[in-house]
Length: 335
Image 1 (cartoon, one colour):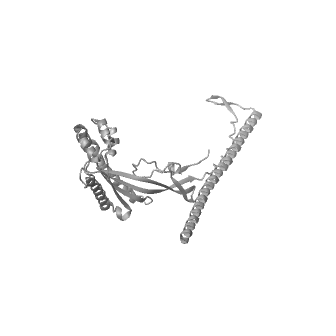
Image 2 (cartoon, rainbow, N blue to C red):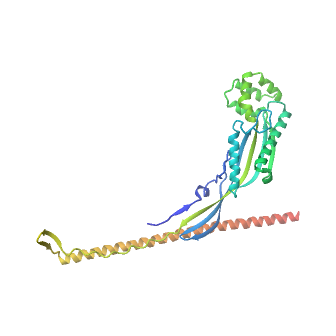
Image 3 (cartoon, rainbow, N blue to C red):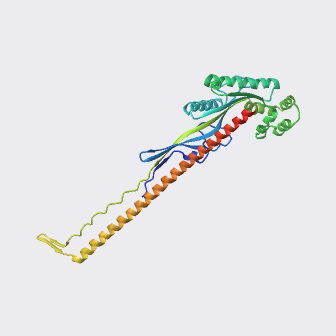
């Protein structure tokens, strides 16, 4: 039987999206992995190939804020889980040197109830407050490019949450939201529906008072493939034929042994047949060993050819990129 063992660490990463080792809560599908052969060496009975699997992704976190406040409350509903997730992600950034942060975006939001100018200022203050938090704890601004935004939500933002709810006077609330009145007029109309307004204050508006943190990163993991070099099994050595007993016991008495001598010609015939059978088995084993050796060599050649093809393709792409860069540089010099 052919002996062929392979420890293949690439797993799904070589044929599907590399999902990165960090917590990723974005709904955007992960992009396909880009796999590059780094090296190929021999280690005793193994061929060792090292690859880098590159991928990109986003990590998103949503932090709640209390009404009319721009100071982080780490214990507020849902915040402990989000902050723990962020902390774990940052810890992984330290451990995985191949994962590089390319962008950090902090966006503060305010709910639509209240004066617009106040809400705009409140959203900006919330973004600034959370930026100060991540800078104080993780030194984000010193390590990465951090972009800060703010949004004062309007009543239309609430529409999906209201439509999916079982709140009182839901259709009347939707009619107000879909109306052409100003934001202040819509708020007054909603407050005239006490049950609906109570539901909004408790279940809808708190979700809009938040800060969204998005971390864009590129990740690359180096993986190793160890493939045992197949070796043919040695052909079994024919065993010498055991001669048959020169006699057969037919009776045994206390006073002696009576034997029946076998026919001499029949005995020689049996020995020849056994010898031929042993030689036949030895030849079959030798043919099988040669066939397995050829198959093993063929597999090794195919693997070497595939590795060279990948390396050649990467070299060609790098050369093409270098040529394009030189061309762009020349064009810029002419401007």
